[in-house]
Length: 375
Ligand SMILES: *Cc1c(COP(=O)(O)O)cnc(C)c1O
Image 1 (spheres, helix red, strand yellow):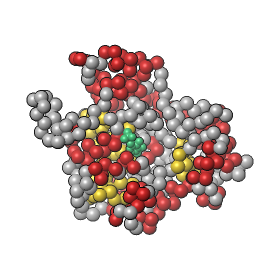
Image 2 (cartoon, helix red, strand yellow):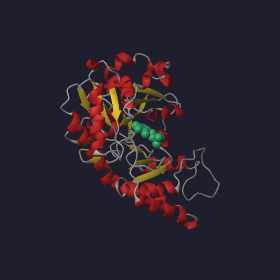
Image 3 (tube, helix red, strand yellow):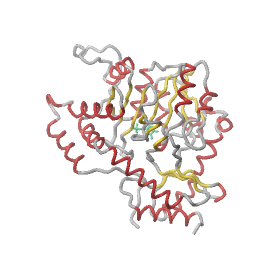
Image 4 (tube, rainbow, N blue to C red):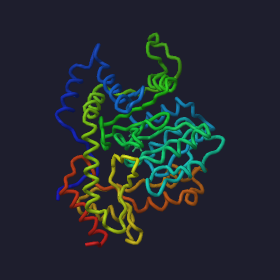
């Protein structure tokens, strides 16, 4: 079998046409047309007032925290199991990340753990739509409202997912997305921030462009800000991908359903969960192994690599990795966040790029069963 990659996009003639159009025509008076079209279409798809195109989701979270005036002395709650991009911007603004546990089923922020982590210093929570799933947002929103805590929804992995009929990213005060090459909708590198709040939007565009307000006198900056803009070539690629969003999400769901057909009857393997009120976008097909197999994610990854199959380990608990493990906020988390510490060692992401065929999926599943001595 040829080499099987974990993730990768679907690029068609449409994407090539739009990017060619941008590189040919999006200059002079037209320099901004693709950014404008991409932002407007993205906002409309999510039923939101504002969308701001950015160079990455990391930049989007940074701007979200700045817009919410999160600063030194504040605490921001974030789930243990996520990519460090969800939490790193908390340090950029001088605030402290507080690591909360995840729910055993959804693998997303546990509402109970979130509530237990709240202190008088808590300013915001960053919920993460892990691997395309969505946490119990009704419970999280009720708790956040009681305590006056702002919600940033990190929907980097969940474009096209929905919860009770609302799109991922539209469930908090600010939603953020990533268009990294591994994500369902890609611009190579890129991100987006969405919100319905006029005041937050104004602060986001101010900090995105070196402290300038749209329409300001030239070179008359109000504050020291950042330079977080998306290029028109990326916006053209993103627009083409967005016009295919239903197809892309359907493809992800189809890939998952092939895996489920092969693996759901196998005892000791748990795949991504989908609640009845949620549409999971299945960015990453993920399997949690029973510890009785005696194989952790790293051993399994080596065994799969021998069969030409790339995998990724489930995220390590943030409080366990060197970037945080020595900080005061990372102490005591093994006891406080037992679900994260129990799931992570036995979780593995399986190949689910847009190029996966039914035949390749069968090969991956057969190989997995072999590695677990099930065949
Ligand atoms: C990919 C990802 C990000 C970061 O996106 P970038 O565009 O690379 O900055 C943030 N959060 C989560 C959950 C992600 O998976």
